[in-house]
Image (cartoon, rainbow, N blue to C red):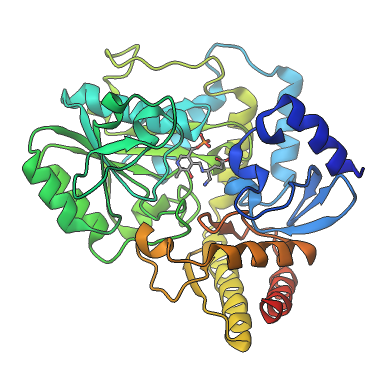
Length: 425
Ligand code: KE4
């Protein structure tokens, strides 16, 4: 057995599916996962010495690529001073100041250790601050695995949700209303019929978890206006889009300010992180100031914060997002040209350096249209690209990411691989 195969056999005996997060098991694309030995720049190497151009980037955090010098040097220096203190440190203050300057709607912020914790805590805060229990989310949007958010649309026209996992009490799931993404009329109807009952609307301002689906014109501003009119809070889950689509996140890209924002991924530079923040009057409800409890042993961890600061400081250069846009557009053009040449039905949705090739006629504007994709063709695309040394997301309903470490030649290589793969589909 090879390196990855042997590790998989050992791992699956001790960890469910041999992985520590389900999507890594390649369930949606078939085959067995390879085990990574190292990453450098735009590439990763597996335990059998094969290398891949990496367009997953650890699901979003690695906007600078793997082991970027600023992060390696900063964390290498910080670790010699200790790994965790359970007491406040200067760099947590610096990161909070940087986030608030970059995202002005975040007047106060709490650092946590995952995007799940960020979204779960933002929901609890919204319920605590408004005294209301119900929340609205959108089909196809994912906000981590907290019980209230692991739900799916109920049957029939009812928008009350049902659990989307064993172990989620239906009583809790029914407090989450699930609506179609980009459907402002459904939001208006729900807020009107349940006026005074909705604590918050939580949304990925650019959906990444049904594949990339941008907001239609007016959708985000409509959510802003409707929630304000009905006394519900607007929560932008920017765990993916924060510092990805713009230095100020999707809220600066689209010019719509939420009441609360969830962050993660990029702000930790690849180390475990999450954050939630927003209006000061809301955040002052959070313990120890207020009565909404949330805590964490490793929240604001010194190494995470050091990696995050090094990453965000590198992104402060305004030319960065022009380069990410240009490279994202180049990858989209390469994949689209390959599909056209081979007569393969493909719709690529992209915002900046996050994109998804849907094997569907399109347009893909919500989860229903995303689900019309030919997922077995996506699986063949994924495996074909992998065999040619190009690593895309192991699911049709995820995003691919371009980093600052990707060169034009890397993007051309991906396009060439796509041409071969599409011809063989
Ligand atoms: P984490 O708990 O995985 O750090 O963050 C949860 C989360 C919250 N909000 C959004 C918009 C997210 O995309 C995520 C996590 N994203 C998934 C994949 N898109 C992480 C990959 C995984 O689950 O292993």
